[in-house]
Image (cartoon, rainbow, N blue to C red):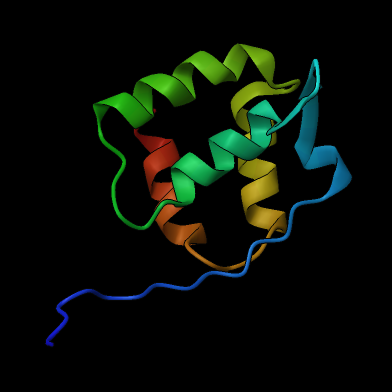
Length: 88
């Protein structure tokens, strides 16, 4: 059997501040979700961009806070994310 699939592994670290609770469900915070969208190596299509823009009002400090977290955070896909941020 021949497989053409490619396996991509990433190590993600989710801190307590990256999680918010909606009733009994834990979800990533708006800023964490925005960072994940910007760092996604696969794509940043119209849907991702719209989602990012809808999240911005929910993030204290808005776009500047996102940029700061990108600069201070892990190197993985930082340049990709910062370039995408310029177009938003």
